[in-house]
Length: 109
Image (tube, rainbow, N blue to C red; front, top):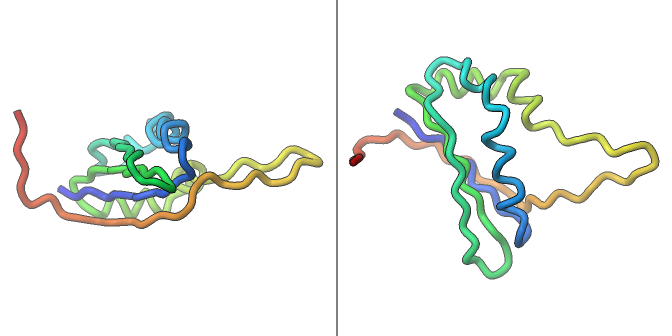
């Protein structure tokens, strides 16, 4: 099994508002072969930012790469267009790092 973690730095106070967006509407994601689940963890103990860890669990990386290259991925990551006469909104996201790791040992209750 693999965990793909998108570590996203956000402006202070924004991580908790953004987190539900990474798990709602996950029905299309469930259609991809090998998808197991998505979890979002938030760290707020940094002085100048918050950090979300969006963890996606996959049985293999083939399904993840298929999803990452899909129209569903593009739609999920599409920024809303500003309304007519409205300036584009500044993103609360400060940056991100994608980490792909194989789970080699684990324990559960």
